[in-house]
Length: 637
Image 1 (spheres, helix red, strand yellow):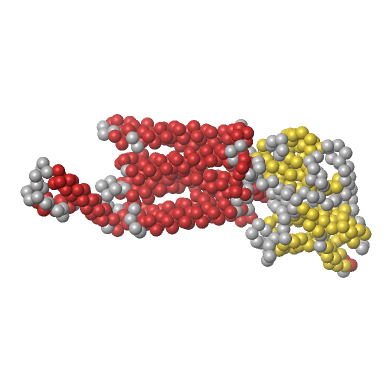
Image 2 (cartoon, one colour; image 1 turned 90 degrees about the vertical axis):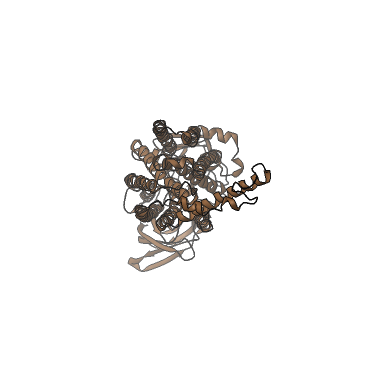
């Protein structure tokens, strides 16, 4: 690597780390792919009698263990009995002890969605009358913290390893068969295999802690590992390891037996065999992702999984081949330069991969978003827009590379001129044209040293001549730029796989807003109002629920709950409520509720002097500068 190449590659590495860090910093348990869409008792409800069970309904099927659902009394003691069970469809229930006392109870849940991501959250309900509760840590830490960050990084490395392994091998077989003997290309593909294998083992170890306790100390818990091996994700990771053993054999043949074949017919037959075997192994590796993640659940999984496999293979062929081409352009020996024909073949392969990506990506976008509004209103849609923009930039740079490829011509080295530039043999110490007495050991060593020097000078001259080709230099620069954009694209794609799909997020938000959206009163006389809000800042969307009991003239109990769009409790810096009876010009009457626990505020003795159509306004502040006021009218009294 020359002096100018190293700073460029260091810059790309720093860019990769910065983008990956920024994306991983935003990863949290909230990026789960199943959402709580309903519960009984519901969030904030004040039940007259104690329920016999608590049931939770999710947007998709989830996996539960003995401690997945806990119900805690006001003192923080568990009151559930037995294990949660699936009662119907996506609804799960856990039995409660009999004779529960009055007060506020906290329900916490920690499950694993059908597409392998942990889902955690909490909410409260009351029996008889609300009360203070000592429960503060309402949301488990599964999927977040240090373990969550390490798991996300492991996923990134596994994707990168697969792309380099599969795409690098495809580049050699389909575009530049001479590259099988180039040491730098061999190291690249083997490095991809090592990265994918190490990341898969790491994910297998982290999986148990990632979906349960979130504690790094549990990474090497053999009991947790045993539980992981019985899950769909554990089976996918083990299958990937078995396929990597077959991939190791493929790589050994490609860079061993294949490079030594000289007979044209034998080499053609071996090329065909390696191509078929390589496609089968690569498709199997891609399936290990499709069978356990987004594609395996939701709409049309039977179609979505093969589409996802094709998408991953197309990404590997394009970006992995691009990495191999970049390595060949910068690191291939002077006597083994990458030919213009190989670059043209890769250009055609990349173009076909882009077409496949557009087709499969369009289907995946429709499946995961479901509406145009989800592009801008959900984090998944926003990340997808960023990915589309990066792909567009990458295609634009690839167009420049195709232009340089069209101009590229191999310039052969003038061997005769190179030989005349060598130091004549007669100049060697010792006189004669043969370099002195052939029997003198000292002269033999000097002759060998001089031969090595001549070879180094010839190689350097050939490299200078090769690099002097302005078309080849332009191609190297454009491919380097493509690789830089590809690194960022891979980081965004990894973040997408950990983000709740826009379709699921919007369905959960609609479900959270529907029960009392018009301001109806419950049978007990209590009033519940749900109001979506958007402060416009980062993490500024949610739903605020105001409960008023008994919703009559005089003193009332008021409870305010703030939730994220997926139904999880949401702590914000400040919540204020006001009541206005515009018909009689009364108010606004301000109420500043006390913070009870995560996402829950309460106020006693809220006085409403007369009956009427009251406007209930809630101001939610999510940061120092971001706040919004939402309101609804309700008949009180």
